Length: 96
Length: 248
Image 1 (cartoon, helix red, strand yellow):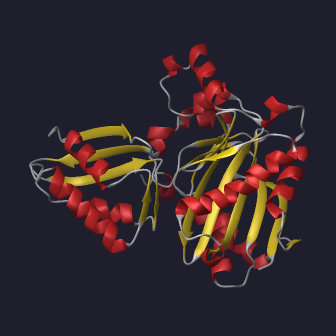
Image 2: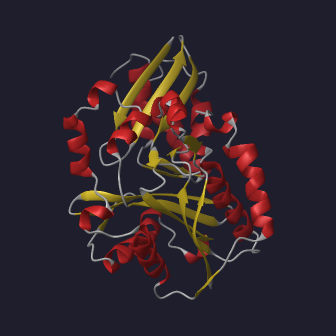
Protein backbone atom coordinates (compact mmCIF):
# COMPACT_ATOMS: atom_id res chain seq x y z
CA UNK A 1 0.00 0.00 0.00
CA UNK A 2 1.00 3.56 -0.47
CA UNK A 3 0.10 6.59 1.55
CA UNK A 4 0.88 10.28 1.28
CA UNK A 5 0.67 13.05 3.83
CA UNK A 6 1.42 16.71 3.26
CA UNK A 7 1.79 19.49 5.81
CA UNK A 8 2.90 23.07 5.75
CA UNK A 9 4.90 23.07 8.96
CA UNK A 10 3.98 26.05 11.12
CA UNK A 11 6.78 28.61 10.88
CA UNK A 12 8.57 26.27 8.49
CA UNK A 13 8.30 24.71 5.07
CA UNK A 14 6.18 22.30 3.09
CA UNK A 15 6.70 18.64 3.93
CA UNK A 16 5.34 15.72 1.92
CA UNK A 17 5.86 12.15 3.05
CA UNK A 18 5.14 9.20 0.77
CA UNK A 19 5.17 5.79 2.38
CA UNK A 20 5.13 2.36 0.78
CA UNK A 21 4.05 -0.10 3.45
CA UNK A 22 2.29 -3.31 4.45
CA UNK A 23 2.55 -4.31 8.10
CA UNK A 24 6.00 -2.76 7.94
CA UNK A 25 7.35 0.34 6.28
CA UNK A 26 9.01 -0.64 3.00
CA UNK A 27 10.07 2.77 1.85
CA UNK A 28 9.67 6.40 2.91
CA UNK A 29 10.17 9.36 0.58
CA UNK A 30 10.49 12.77 2.19
CA UNK A 31 10.07 15.71 -0.18
CA UNK A 32 9.36 19.41 0.11
CA UNK A 33 10.86 22.89 0.02
CA UNK A 34 12.83 22.57 3.25
CA UNK A 35 16.61 22.79 3.69
CA UNK A 36 19.03 20.23 5.08
CA UNK A 37 22.77 20.02 4.99
CA UNK A 38 24.54 17.74 4.57
CA UNK A 39 21.72 16.78 2.20
CA UNK A 40 22.19 13.03 2.55
CA UNK A 41 20.72 13.22 6.05
CA UNK A 42 17.28 12.94 4.44
CA UNK A 43 18.19 9.67 2.69
CA UNK A 44 19.64 8.41 5.95
CA UNK A 45 16.37 9.21 7.71
CA UNK A 46 14.40 7.46 4.96
CA UNK A 47 16.61 4.36 5.21
CA UNK A 48 16.45 4.29 9.01
CA UNK A 49 12.67 3.88 8.86
CA UNK A 50 12.56 0.95 6.44
CA UNK A 51 11.47 -2.26 8.14
CA UNK A 52 9.84 -0.50 11.06
CA UNK A 53 6.39 -1.74 12.03
CA UNK A 54 3.64 0.68 11.03
CA UNK A 55 2.45 0.31 14.61
CA UNK A 56 5.79 1.41 16.06
CA UNK A 57 4.25 4.64 17.18
CA UNK A 58 5.00 8.27 16.56
CA UNK A 59 7.37 8.58 19.51
CA UNK A 60 9.63 5.74 18.36
CA UNK A 61 9.74 7.15 14.85
CA UNK A 62 10.55 10.61 16.12
CA UNK A 63 13.39 9.20 18.25
CA UNK A 64 14.82 7.29 15.32
CA UNK A 65 14.74 10.39 13.14
CA UNK A 66 16.23 12.59 15.86
CA UNK A 67 19.05 10.08 16.34
CA UNK A 68 19.95 10.19 12.64
CA UNK A 69 19.95 13.99 12.63
CA UNK A 70 22.12 14.13 15.75
CA UNK A 71 24.56 11.47 14.54
CA UNK A 72 24.93 13.17 11.16
CA UNK A 73 25.37 16.57 12.80
CA UNK A 74 23.01 17.91 10.16
CA UNK A 75 21.17 21.19 10.04
CA UNK A 76 17.56 20.60 9.09
CA UNK A 77 15.63 23.80 8.52
CA UNK A 78 11.90 24.17 7.97
CA UNK A 79 10.86 20.66 9.10
CA UNK A 80 11.82 18.53 12.08
CA UNK A 81 11.73 14.99 13.44
CA UNK A 82 8.30 15.50 14.98
CA UNK A 83 6.69 16.72 11.74
CA UNK A 84 8.23 13.86 9.72
CA UNK A 85 7.03 11.26 12.26
CA UNK A 86 3.58 12.82 12.44
CA UNK A 87 3.16 12.72 8.66
CA UNK A 88 4.41 9.14 8.38
CA UNK A 89 1.70 8.13 10.85
CA UNK A 90 -0.88 9.98 8.80
CA UNK A 91 0.38 8.45 5.55
CA UNK A 92 0.01 4.91 6.91
CA UNK A 93 -3.39 5.80 8.29
CA UNK A 94 -2.49 5.67 11.96
CA UNK A 95 -3.25 8.84 13.80
CA UNK A 96 -2.62 9.20 17.49
CA UNK B 1 39.89 37.82 1.54
CA UNK B 2 39.51 39.36 -1.88
CA UNK B 3 36.37 38.49 -3.83
CA UNK B 4 36.09 37.71 -7.51
CA UNK B 5 33.00 39.21 -9.13
CA UNK B 6 31.77 37.65 -12.35
CA UNK B 7 29.59 40.11 -14.25
CA UNK B 8 26.08 39.40 -15.49
CA UNK B 9 25.95 36.58 -18.00
CA UNK B 10 23.21 34.40 -19.38
CA UNK B 11 23.28 30.61 -19.62
CA UNK B 12 20.85 27.78 -19.82
CA UNK B 13 19.60 26.23 -16.58
CA UNK B 14 21.95 23.24 -16.64
CA UNK B 15 25.02 25.38 -17.16
CA UNK B 16 23.95 27.86 -14.49
CA UNK B 17 23.70 25.12 -11.88
CA UNK B 18 26.87 23.42 -13.14
CA UNK B 19 28.83 26.67 -12.87
CA UNK B 20 27.82 27.06 -9.23
CA UNK B 21 28.96 23.54 -8.44
CA UNK B 22 32.21 23.85 -10.39
CA UNK B 23 33.11 27.12 -8.70
CA UNK B 24 32.35 25.51 -5.31
CA UNK B 25 34.85 22.77 -6.07
CA UNK B 26 37.56 25.22 -7.05
CA UNK B 27 36.90 27.43 -4.03
CA UNK B 28 37.07 24.31 -1.82
CA UNK B 29 40.47 23.39 -3.23
CA UNK B 30 41.70 26.96 -2.82
CA UNK B 31 42.29 27.37 -6.55
CA UNK B 32 39.55 29.99 -6.94
CA UNK B 33 38.79 33.07 -4.90
CA UNK B 34 35.48 33.51 -3.12
CA UNK B 35 33.10 34.40 -5.90
CA UNK B 36 30.01 36.47 -6.50
CA UNK B 37 28.33 35.92 -9.84
CA UNK B 38 25.26 37.39 -11.51
CA UNK B 39 23.24 35.68 -14.20
CA UNK B 40 20.00 35.20 -16.05
CA UNK B 41 18.43 32.10 -17.59
CA UNK B 42 18.03 31.55 -21.34
CA UNK B 43 15.76 29.84 -22.17
CA UNK B 44 13.47 30.54 -19.23
CA UNK B 45 13.55 27.70 -16.74
CA UNK B 46 12.04 26.21 -13.64
CA UNK B 47 14.44 25.18 -10.92
CA UNK B 48 13.24 22.86 -8.19
CA UNK B 49 14.67 22.43 -4.72
CA UNK B 50 17.00 19.54 -3.95
CA UNK B 51 14.32 17.71 -1.94
CA UNK B 52 11.35 18.32 -4.19
CA UNK B 53 9.69 15.83 -6.47
CA UNK B 54 9.85 17.11 -10.06
CA UNK B 55 6.58 15.47 -11.01
CA UNK B 56 4.85 16.93 -7.97
CA UNK B 57 6.01 20.45 -8.74
CA UNK B 58 6.22 20.99 -12.50
CA UNK B 59 3.91 20.36 -15.44
CA UNK B 60 6.53 18.77 -17.67
CA UNK B 61 4.32 18.84 -20.77
CA UNK B 62 3.68 22.57 -20.47
CA UNK B 63 7.38 23.16 -19.94
CA UNK B 64 8.11 21.26 -23.15
CA UNK B 65 5.48 23.20 -25.08
CA UNK B 66 6.84 26.52 -23.86
CA UNK B 67 10.49 25.52 -24.33
CA UNK B 68 11.18 25.98 -20.64
CA UNK B 69 14.02 23.95 -19.13
CA UNK B 70 13.66 22.18 -15.79
CA UNK B 71 16.58 21.60 -13.46
CA UNK B 72 17.05 20.32 -9.92
CA UNK B 73 19.21 22.59 -7.77
CA UNK B 74 21.83 21.49 -5.26
CA UNK B 75 20.08 23.69 -2.73
CA UNK B 76 16.84 23.12 -0.90
CA UNK B 77 13.86 25.41 -1.10
CA UNK B 78 10.97 25.59 -3.50
CA UNK B 79 10.30 25.56 -7.23
CA UNK B 80 11.14 28.83 -8.94
CA UNK B 81 10.18 30.06 -12.39
CA UNK B 82 13.16 31.94 -13.85
CA UNK B 83 11.84 34.07 -16.68
CA UNK B 84 14.65 35.21 -19.00
CA UNK B 85 13.61 38.82 -18.60
CA UNK B 86 11.96 38.55 -15.22
CA UNK B 87 14.77 38.38 -12.71
CA UNK B 88 18.45 38.57 -11.94
CA UNK B 89 19.99 35.66 -10.07
CA UNK B 90 23.14 35.82 -7.98
CA UNK B 91 25.40 33.21 -6.44
CA UNK B 92 27.75 33.71 -3.53
CA UNK B 93 30.39 31.01 -3.14
CA UNK B 94 32.83 31.31 -0.27
CA UNK B 95 34.68 29.28 2.34
CA UNK B 96 32.42 28.67 5.34
CA UNK B 97 35.11 30.27 7.50
CA UNK B 98 34.25 33.65 5.92
CA UNK B 99 30.58 33.34 6.83
CA UNK B 100 28.55 33.16 10.04
CA UNK B 101 28.23 29.61 11.31
CA UNK B 102 24.47 29.75 11.83
CA UNK B 103 22.16 29.15 8.91
CA UNK B 104 19.88 32.06 9.73
CA UNK B 105 22.76 34.42 10.37
CA UNK B 106 24.42 33.60 7.06
CA UNK B 107 21.13 34.02 5.18
CA UNK B 108 20.70 37.33 6.91
CA UNK B 109 24.20 38.49 6.01
CA UNK B 110 23.94 37.74 2.29
CA UNK B 111 20.31 38.84 2.08
CA UNK B 112 21.59 42.11 3.54
CA UNK B 113 23.51 42.65 0.32
CA UNK B 114 20.28 42.41 -1.66
CA UNK B 115 18.58 44.79 0.76
CA UNK B 116 21.51 47.15 0.16
CA UNK B 117 21.10 46.73 -3.62
CA UNK B 118 17.40 47.55 -3.46
CA UNK B 119 18.19 50.62 -1.37
CA UNK B 120 20.35 51.89 -4.26
CA UNK B 121 17.22 52.15 -6.40
CA UNK B 122 15.12 53.54 -3.59
CA UNK B 123 13.34 50.35 -2.52
CA UNK B 124 13.21 49.66 1.21
CA UNK B 125 13.10 45.98 2.09
CA UNK B 126 13.75 43.62 4.97
CA UNK B 127 14.92 40.09 5.66
CA UNK B 128 12.18 37.62 6.45
CA UNK B 129 13.51 34.37 7.90
CA UNK B 130 14.10 31.74 6.79
CA UNK B 131 15.15 32.80 3.32
CA UNK B 132 13.06 35.62 1.88
CA UNK B 133 13.30 39.35 1.41
CA UNK B 134 10.12 41.35 1.56
CA UNK B 135 9.14 44.87 0.76
CA UNK B 136 5.85 46.31 2.03
CA UNK B 137 5.08 42.81 3.27
CA UNK B 138 5.49 41.22 -0.18
CA UNK B 139 8.24 38.85 -1.29
CA UNK B 140 10.70 40.32 -3.79
CA UNK B 141 13.59 37.87 -3.41
CA UNK B 142 13.94 34.16 -2.61
CA UNK B 143 17.23 32.58 -1.58
CA UNK B 144 18.66 29.12 -1.01
CA UNK B 145 21.83 27.93 0.64
CA UNK B 146 23.90 24.80 1.01
CA UNK B 147 27.27 23.96 2.48
CA UNK B 148 29.57 21.23 1.29
CA UNK B 149 33.29 20.55 1.66
CA UNK B 150 33.75 23.68 3.76
CA UNK B 151 32.20 25.92 1.12
CA UNK B 152 28.97 27.86 1.38
CA UNK B 153 26.85 28.38 -1.71
CA UNK B 154 23.92 30.75 -1.59
CA UNK B 155 21.99 31.64 -4.69
CA UNK B 156 18.86 33.66 -5.03
CA UNK B 157 16.75 35.76 -7.29
CA UNK B 158 15.65 39.34 -7.35
CA UNK B 159 12.29 39.67 -9.06
CA UNK B 160 12.36 42.29 -11.77
CA UNK B 161 9.18 41.37 -13.62
CA UNK B 162 6.76 38.53 -13.01
CA UNK B 163 4.53 36.67 -15.41
CA UNK B 164 2.20 35.08 -12.90
CA UNK B 165 0.03 33.35 -15.48
CA UNK B 166 2.97 31.57 -17.14
CA UNK B 167 4.38 30.72 -13.74
CA UNK B 168 1.14 29.01 -12.76
CA UNK B 169 0.79 27.07 -15.97
CA UNK B 170 4.27 25.64 -15.31
CA UNK B 171 4.09 25.04 -11.59
CA UNK B 172 1.63 22.40 -10.53
CA UNK B 173 -1.29 24.19 -9.11
CA UNK B 174 -4.62 22.69 -10.12
CA UNK B 175 -5.68 24.50 -13.28
CA UNK B 176 -9.05 25.47 -11.85
CA UNK B 177 -7.22 27.48 -9.25
CA UNK B 178 -5.55 29.68 -11.83
CA UNK B 179 -8.44 32.06 -11.68
CA UNK B 180 -8.11 35.81 -11.65
CA UNK B 181 -8.76 35.62 -7.95
CA UNK B 182 -5.72 33.47 -7.36
CA UNK B 183 -3.47 35.57 -9.57
CA UNK B 184 -4.61 38.58 -7.63
CA UNK B 185 -3.75 36.84 -4.40
CA UNK B 186 -0.23 35.97 -5.61
CA UNK B 187 0.24 39.57 -6.61
CA UNK B 188 -0.77 40.47 -3.10
CA UNK B 189 2.01 38.26 -1.73
CA UNK B 190 4.74 38.80 -4.32
CA UNK B 191 6.12 41.97 -5.81
CA UNK B 192 8.77 43.01 -8.34
CA UNK B 193 11.19 45.85 -8.96
CA UNK B 194 9.07 47.19 -11.84
CA UNK B 195 6.29 47.95 -9.36
CA UNK B 196 8.55 50.61 -7.88
CA UNK B 197 9.62 52.52 -10.97
CA UNK B 198 10.62 52.29 -14.58
CA UNK B 199 14.00 50.67 -13.97
CA UNK B 200 15.87 48.80 -16.69
CA UNK B 201 17.48 45.41 -16.02
CA UNK B 202 20.81 47.24 -16.34
CA UNK B 203 19.78 49.65 -13.55
CA UNK B 204 18.95 46.71 -11.32
CA UNK B 205 22.16 44.90 -12.16
CA UNK B 206 24.23 48.04 -11.45
CA UNK B 207 22.48 48.35 -8.09
CA UNK B 208 23.20 44.70 -7.29
CA UNK B 209 26.83 45.09 -8.25
CA UNK B 210 27.12 48.03 -5.85
CA UNK B 211 25.10 46.38 -3.10
CA UNK B 212 27.03 43.10 -3.18
CA UNK B 213 30.50 44.68 -3.32
CA UNK B 214 29.98 47.41 -0.70
CA UNK B 215 32.81 47.40 1.85
CA UNK B 216 34.52 44.45 0.14
CA UNK B 217 37.85 44.08 -1.54
CA UNK B 218 37.08 42.69 -4.95
CA UNK B 219 38.08 42.53 -8.57
CA UNK B 220 36.00 41.88 -11.63
CA UNK B 221 37.02 38.49 -12.94
CA UNK B 222 36.05 35.68 -15.21
CA UNK B 223 35.76 31.92 -15.05
CA UNK B 224 38.95 29.94 -15.38
CA UNK B 225 39.22 27.49 -18.26
CA UNK B 226 39.26 24.67 -15.69
CA UNK B 227 36.03 25.90 -14.11
CA UNK B 228 34.41 26.14 -17.53
CA UNK B 229 35.55 22.69 -18.51
CA UNK B 230 34.20 21.13 -15.30
CA UNK B 231 30.94 23.08 -15.69
CA UNK B 232 30.37 21.68 -19.16
CA UNK B 233 30.96 18.19 -17.85
CA UNK B 234 28.62 18.67 -14.86
CA UNK B 235 25.99 20.29 -17.05
CA UNK B 236 25.91 17.28 -19.34
CA UNK B 237 26.46 14.50 -16.85
CA UNK B 238 24.48 15.74 -13.87
CA UNK B 239 22.15 18.66 -14.43
CA UNK B 240 20.76 17.55 -17.80
CA UNK B 241 20.44 13.95 -16.67
CA UNK B 242 17.00 12.53 -15.92
CA UNK B 243 18.60 10.51 -13.14
CA UNK B 244 19.35 13.76 -11.31
CA UNK B 245 16.25 15.72 -12.18
CA UNK B 246 13.80 12.92 -11.42
CA UNK B 247 15.65 11.51 -8.42
CA UNK B 248 12.73 12.35 -6.12
